[in-house]
Image 1 (cartoon, one colour):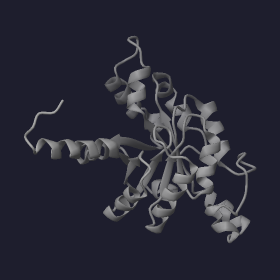
Image 2 (cartoon, helix red, strand yellow; image 1 turned 180 degrees about the vertical axis):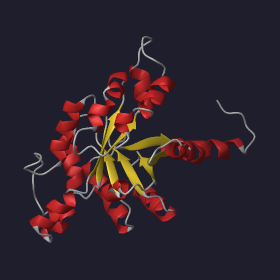
Image 3 (cartoon, rainbow, N blue to C red; image 1 turned 60 degrees about the horizontal axis):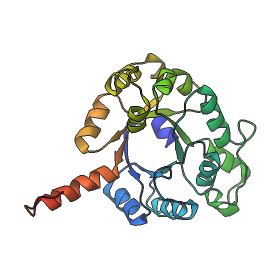
Image 4 (tube, one colour; image 1 turned 90 degrees about the vertical axis):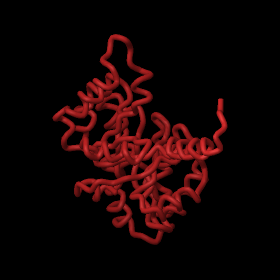
Length: 246
């Protein structure tokens, strides 16, 4: 994933919150580029997360994981199970970004515990050097979810080891005050910030049209909000009955 992003590829994936490995398989068969498993707002624990990763691997589908805020230990365990990247929520400043990178890198560049025997090391069948080299391909995306984080976006993505950024629009709207610019104005400003041009921008999208608009607007990665996509389809099916719903 990290090499493809560095090469400038435009990639589309989907955000999965529900513990259902068949959905992961369906996304792979449909031809998406990656899946993002949401452990912040979804119920997945490490056991179900491992199952999702294993099913994705069977189809060659890279898995990114969103842990909860500051859950670096969960992120490390996700990487041990074969996740290819971390999307970290609520990164507020360069100090937090640096702490995130340290948690995901092996010594001497970080503090992640080293072992080749978990799933990512093929249960000890790769050499330590091979495992260390593979770990360098882990994609790290910082989520910016407050006006302050957007104001410090250049400092955050400037931390060595942060590959991209994603604005959490819902949290941004919840955290802004009347004294702050509107969400639309904040988004426009951060997307025009020249300090972010060296990092990959990721957007959430609820439809194919929204994804196309994001790509046209400069996003390199688009993550479909699968819950929104599915609910839109379900509402359309329900509307076909002609009955009014609450």
